[in-house]
Image (tube, rainbow over all chains, first blue to last red; front, side, top):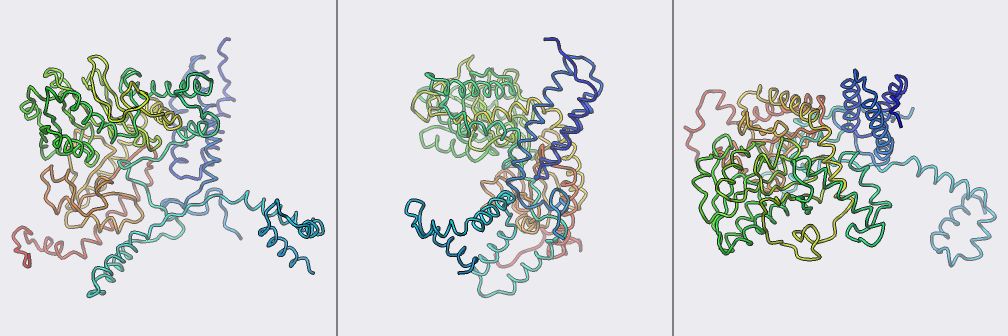
Length: 97
Length: 500
């Protein structure tokens, strides 16, 4: 099968999805890490042109997205107190009016 | 009968009666109230959908326990106890609008499990439950395949062959296997072991146990930087030395020993070289072939893997022989019998794979935060970094705050999870033996705190820690009469203390 490199649109969509799902983590440290990692990895590979390399990076990104989707749900199921550096009422939880 | 009371009755009845002995009365009641019952049930289901399992952090426990022990110890001076507690209450400021869970900066004790590791492990708790040693059916084959993949990833980090990796329950077991196994195998001809004073407790205790079995053990001294002297090591090696065990990265001060030089010397003298790399594996570059390492202990939970598993690298060429501590079915080349835990092994393997993949970005991140933290902490007066500033793993920082007692600083830092040394000794008030070995006096050893930075630490956390430490150190020093004397220019060593 010839390597079909993903379109610009597909890559941007993957990036957006990774950021969105990383933001779903209830745990502060994991959330910050996966946001940082998504940003850095995409920035690092910004100028990759090789089709096969792009293909493998894209597949890896999709695997990571699957992990983020599953693990962010687990992180929402088992929650802990917010950290001392974390403002309350910002992510997901809204104060009852 | 009103609706609400009958619902109550129904629920009470159904609690009393089990499904099998449900009486006809209940059935009648239930059919009469079918609508209200089903809506109540629906509400209950809906509620349980929303509820997440919240675990709260108890940050006041240590303070309560201390107050209790103080009260129990001294009925005579309740004033002192209460004034101490209120002082700590001032030192601990609660920021409203922020959470209460402490920042985790104790990465040498253990690290958080990476979500990607957990993701790998979950399928072994849900479907892939086969015994990896069962080779008669697919359940065994599939788990065995995953275990061998994990072994490959773990071996790759240190440039070893996957056949040289033995899974154990952790670095403590690996160290014990080496210290006891190698020396027992060679006990007829060789009776001497060399190690250092700054090793982890499990190496020191295992060596001590070998003294009882008739071995001689040399504990090498370290200099004020925490490094061993190659000359002293060379002089200590005797014809009957069977093992040299020197840790790669110290768990309390983060100092790296010159592994390559030690390896070359041991190979030249034909002595087995073991290194405890629990704190070094995946954090500093290690190549067992280039460094001539014969045995190497690894722990999974220091590299964001699951707790309860570790590994031991045992070189095959030239072959290292050791007597197993655990006898049994002959798994793991007969060196460590017992069924492997596939979930833990694959979690460990995934953690090692991530190390291979993320090594450069992790190191860059940790070094950047570490530099910031060191600069921030050393800008406080009368603080010093323990251990060598050059030969160190940047993620482990041990700083002494003179004229402040470490334990009281830790009490005042309830919003940061830190330790004054290794987790094994933090329960006792005994000063760290590692800092003692470096030639630090009791006061300095008491006033030192270890900071651990890892993959999941953030810049915001480091900023918070620098600010919090500067404030609390200043606060505690203002309480201290010693600090007052230092400010007045009195040399503390010139004081003759009375009453001792």
